[in-house]
Image (cartoon, rainbow, N blue to C red; front, side, top):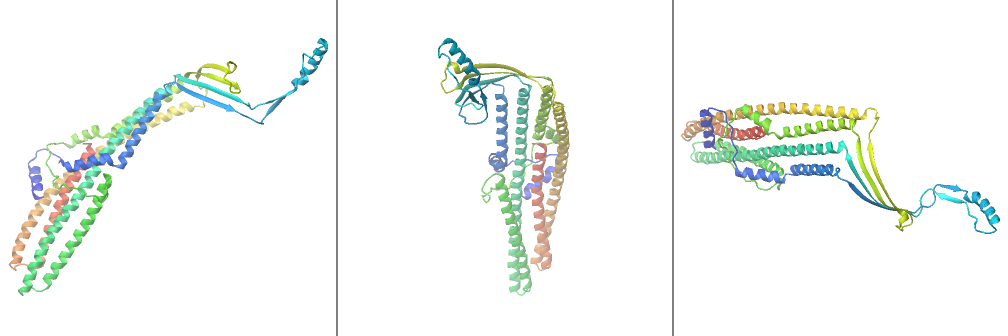
Amino acid sequence: MKLSCLVLVLFLLNSSISAIYAQNSAILEDYVRTGLTSNLALQQQTLDLRKAQESIRQAKSLFYPTIAFNANYTRAVGGRSIDLPIGDLLNPVYTTLNQVTQSSAFPQIENQKIQFLPDNFQETKIKFAYPLFNSDLRYNRQIQEQLYESKSAQKAAYEQELRYQITDAYLQYIQALEAEKIWLNAKTVLTELRRFNESLVKNNVATRDVVATADYELSKADNEIYKLRSSQNTARAYFNFLINQDLQGEVVADTALLRVAALAYQPADLLQKALTNRQEFAALRAGLAATETDVKRNDANRKLPDFYIGGEFGFQGFGYNFGDDQTYALAQIGLTYDLYDAGLRKSKTQMARLENEKTRTQLTQVQQQIALQVTQSWNAFEAARNTCVTAQTGLRAAEETFRIVNNKYRANQVLLIEFLEAQNRVTTARLQLTLAWTDILLKEAALRQAAGL
């Protein structure tokens, strides 16, 4: 750990340009790939993307003819009916004709009662329809394709965010591991102190309180170790949650993450890369294109009619016999255009324009937000680097002080409290250096995420 931070110090002192650090860890990259494959939230985004693909297929299918087969048979009893007094009208005529012809050629007929509901009636047909011209269909397909591009970009943006979240959680876990190592080392020093103090008591050089004090310091170290292990369990569970693994599953820690990168960027370069690489912009631009297409669609609906052709062929009549007397065919050609709709289409066009303007405003706002995010992330990264330099200097001073105090204590030249203060300063300095080291990696991850790297 000291060597890694010393390399960092030398780099900061000698570098003529600002640089960022690369987290070149094969272990971490494997975990990131696992997360990008298994994360449940990302799987939901993938399903949304597939749904958008199906919407495109549906929009394209509307350009083709539709052919449908329909068959129905009706039996009816009761309902409305009409009385036809055909017997009252024709029977007197028929009677007169029979008398004139001296025959019974004209029989008497009864009045009829006609039921409105058709009984024993069947209709079996094939029906087709084809839109010759419909502006809605063309623009709807374009809108669905643009919405698909937007959702695809949103998925890519979430992948970038997920990569950052996995990296952040992994570094938090490593930070807890490193802090535990420092306290275990402190415990080793305190255990040796207790052994030394016991030897002093046995040789009547010191009283028993020095052993009790060492025991108390050991108990505090044990408490810190316990809290850190609890933090490790929480960090491990959250990390495994992100990559959709068993929450209590083992996480392989790569503690050699700090590397000096060959890449070097100025803040302005990072901002330019953010405006180019961040998928949020691609999503908003695709959404903006969709709103512009929607304006064109509503405007076309105000000006252009719809044309279509269609037809039917089948059988229709009483009883299922499919004879020639039941065969029929028809063809249609049609045009539809709303002459008056109380300003409905005009209002829809205006609404589409307002949505387009809203999306433009969102795009400008997101540009400003990301520019601010890159600036804040860069400043935080710079501060973390300087903090690490200070922490390194503080650790060297604390270790040198402890070396001197330790020698003096063993020569009975300083009090136990001075020894403990020096030892605590070393532990604190090591913890601060570990925090500073991991904070550089955390701030780098945030900077990379902000810049879309």
